[in-house]
Length: 350
Figure 1: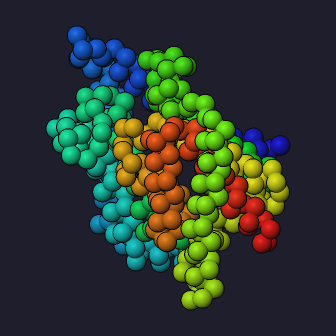
Figure 2: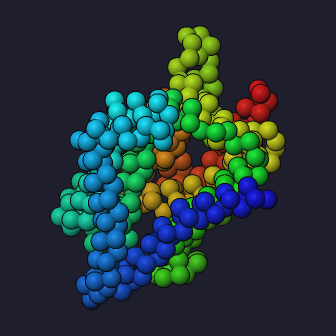
């Protein structure tokens, strides 16, 4: 019980402020109308400044690590292991850049002319829309997380990561995280501020499926498992092509879920609920197929930048096309089937 409560509190601590932020920026956007386009501008600017302040702090920390990390490494001695200290001393420039470069981009997004350029050339956003602006800036957090993971290295992260031996912690962590993802998708698209529940579901693309569409989704999800199956077959012929640290980290993070049917179902159903609502439901119509799929692939940081990341990107493309061709409910069915099938195969093999 304690482990489950701890996991829920951890996720609330991370996602709670984000949900509140997007609730507030939706309030600021609600005030803006074609007749009064500047209404609520002051409130929006305060929220922009708070977001920019967070990036500014990370930006400064990145500059310090980049240019002074070698000199500061000795201060970590006695606090961290010698391996960690030596790695930071040798990789401080990469770690620093992984912090300050995406943080700088996150701040630059608040420049209207840059958003207008992106809206015309790259992304289907409304450059004046305050929620779109905040979401685009916040997407840089994913890049910070990914670049820091790569700079530190999966090997070091794997060694420093303790296995999740408590099944209750893993179950609670996965479910609470994805429920909060779903809540963020609802709040981010205007629930309780700009849209009612029916309008939000329509915006997220959550609509009923026919039996034929459900069966097609199950078939597509099962077929997508050919990607990892092909990788496994290639490894039997030519040796490992995936960093072993990727497999080890995945096992440490999700291991207890592979030991039971409820765990395998959690892998599929929780991800179908949270990840599909936030990525295919909320973000895809505003960020487009490519950028949304890239973010989806990169948020799986336990893969770092590896062949597995590329595989997830292609799966994300398939889910995106399902959302655009039919609706988000179909992408949920595909995602759930994909994860559950992989989980069952892993459980049977282990």
